[in-house]
Length: 237
Length: 128
Image (cartoon, rainbow over all chains, first blue to last red):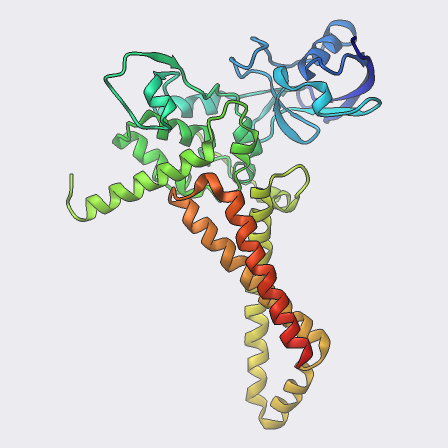
């Protein structure tokens, strides 16, 4: 039998240069609906000026990342039941550490450019992906990479909060996963704002909805960088 | 490459533990203890400067630091040193790809050691 909860959505609103504020929408919901379902209903029945990003509704496109009650969530797979209670509040805010375009939508252009710069591959071999970075070029079975480029890890990262120049967890994980540490990628990742800027808070891995484990990948990338430096020092190819 | 201005004003948010995981608690603890130990270093050097005042100044200083408030302060320094040092070992290990998947267990284990050590020193300091 379907349950009905009365909850209040508090939605972050900001248009252009206007001051940020929160709009409240009281709603009847099924607690097994997803947070994104409620946001869409607000747009459909209460306020058509609400701007937010979404597409696939099944955690593949990575478009609907937002901050829900203070925690980064992919809203299309976050049940209302998991973030509030009957009579409770769901505060929805845009992701942190990205410029806000409007309301809940953020500009991820720089992030996508960085992902491309480090050679992140959206499609990888199964052996490659399943073995956490061990590359098998002979494997012809392909699958989509675990990383859906949602940006939640960058939103949750305390270093990205103070240093926008920091490449961020997804980008460094992309470099580790690509396995191709050519000179261009090395210049980016083996630098002040690359792998060495991470301060081990592990929030990226906590919020990742796709089991990429960016923190593990950053540490593995460091291991590879140190190994390269040692080999270079001793003249080993 | 586009310029990315630093946002030092957001540093204060590093210390906000709300809705954060254990890794962030470790991150916050390391910063608080690190700042505390740095502050202590300066205080320590200022205190040592008292020695230049001769034997009487030194004796007066020693009598002052036997005060329970100072003892509690010294215990805070010991606690900070244990927490910062042991957490530093965890970060050092995991930063080079060793036991990265076990960072929470490492943190809990090492902080248990720190708590036992702090209790031991507290008993020693306040019962002698």
